Image: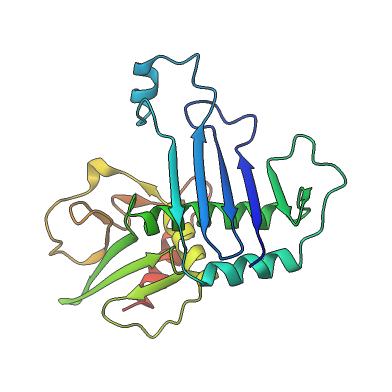
Length: 235
């Protein structure tokens, strides 16, 4: 891959301590220099930052190589990317062979960048892969499935096999569907489920039962039915 720089900053309406900027510097040998800096924190006290779940310094730098699947994905997106007329006040900027430009297909680049950040964190060992345990108890029968999503290699794995074949885009939509739900941790249980129902667990501790600890989000009465249909297909 030719040398490539990708710069991203959160929108101006994202407040500190959540606002940040990242840069990806790919060399010709596909080596990556990654920098992530949190911004606009000068006016916040230490307590205000800590209360939001952050630390005094959440900036992060890493250098290394990602799985080759990422080179192909980036090249594919570059091939269909056109430049905007101006680079002023743009949240995403690309630089290749000396030309700096903002992409017209902002949404596609935004999605790729968020996945790319997670891929860096996994590859560097800063964060673990996304995992979810699923247990369905019906008519006295227990079915268990363990699902792992690898951003580092853009794959999803079903530990006990599945009739469903998920490419990366479908895996992302599956995760998005799950997090649309209204989760109530107070109604979760740390006991392995024994009663009929469908249960999800993300930390090997708390089990969330559909229809009890997981409910329909506001304005979406069909959510639980759709989610249960998707989950049953994975067993």
